Amino acid sequence: MSAIAPSSPKRDHLMATAWRLFYRDGLRAVGIDTILAEACVAKMTLYNHFPSKEELIIAILEKRDAEFRASLIARVESAGTDPVQRLLAVFDWHEAWFGTEDFKGCIFIRAVSEYPDPSHPIHQTAWRHKIAVKTLLADLATAAGARDPAALAETLSLLIDGAIVTAHATQSTSPAVSARATAAALLQLAQTSAA
Amino acid sequence: MSAIAPSSPKRDHLMATAWRLFYRDGLRAVGIDTILAEACVAKMTLYNHFPSKEELIIAILEKRDAEFRASLIARVESAGTDPVQRLLAVFDWHEAWFGTEDFKGCIFIRAVSEYPDPSHPIHQTAWRHKIAVKTLLADLATAAGARDPAALAETLSLLIDGAIVTAHATQSTSPAVSARATAAALLQLAQTSAA
DNA sequence: GCACAAATATACAGATCTGTCTATTTTCTT
DNA sequence: AAGAAAATAGACAGATCTGTATATTTGTGC
Image 1 (tube, rainbow over the protein chains, first blue to last red):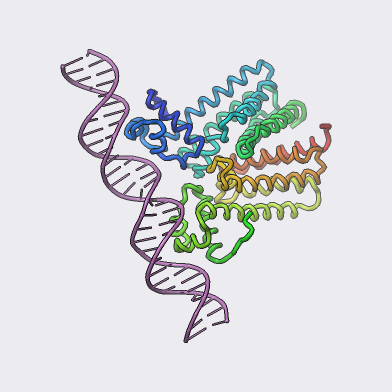
Image 2: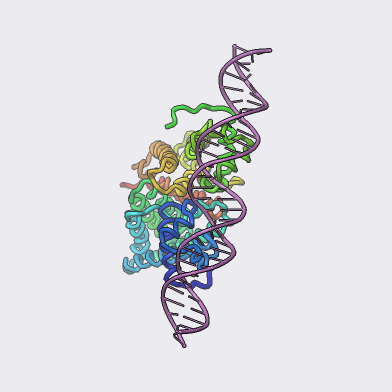
């Protein structure tokens, strides 16, 4: 998992520019030259920092994963101590995200779509993010006293991924509201009913 | 919505070959030349049948939409008359699909991911399929006596799309099982509890 | 000022991309 | 068998793609 992360201004600037273009237009749709022109950086500088476009994409995905989860966790923390509210805060966070100006879905789902071979490094890197989020959901479900936290986390993950895709295609925040309401109902079921 | 569909052997063969390659490797990843070589068809033949690669993709998406829904509806019909079993048959159908040899997710979700601009014709064509499936789900939810069939159909759609993405990335059929169990629980809630 | 490292511009390779053009051959209809 | 339609091969345009090579400039520390 990329043991070293040699940060530098140029490297960061390249990653920021590449991220913006990749997210807006797609990983395969954006070429190296476009990134270089937009970032005003020479080609050799890019290839001195990254061995290939593929490694650049992977570095961006790993960075986004860290930022994404840090932001999500911050929202959960700000929701207080009630475990139910903390779990539902995940959906509130998504609703706010869906409403942002340039929301274009989830780069990890899109990476999995653009590199459909499950053995591809980009595909695998992208999916590790989803596993990490599901682990977070399982922790929250455990804290909320769910009977089968892993199963609930799995279902909530399905809801979230579906909501992301739908919010993207419909340019709407309402899938987050639907998912949140469903999550609340499922959590109550998992707390009260028998398996 | 493509009023005319001038079917011909060459055209069908091109669409079948292109579909296979697009689904396996991605829409942007597969070039015209690759399709032509694989199909053993001359380039001008393709451009006599389709004005552009984009139109070829759209034609394929519309064909797949029709086939997909016909197969799904057939499964629902074969489930008998019990409205609950008919609705749950949708999830059984997906489980079987996830287990097919070359399952690589949903071409419509992948098209939305590869063409992230919601105003793009390919993006819009792909999403129309999802709307059609959701309409089918709403009909089944109505028949099953759901209190708010549209809301239930929306939630089930989220579950299904999430399950497709997850089944693709994990190469597993179990997301269909999770989604089915959740759907059964939600349906029971929608039949019994108050809004 | 000097040495070293980083970034630059530029050209280039070799492949690939979508789409067009032309001229020839095959196929089908009548 | 004759004429019309469809499909063919193959070259071509012009752009784009990733990645490399080279030589120069810039910036920094000593």
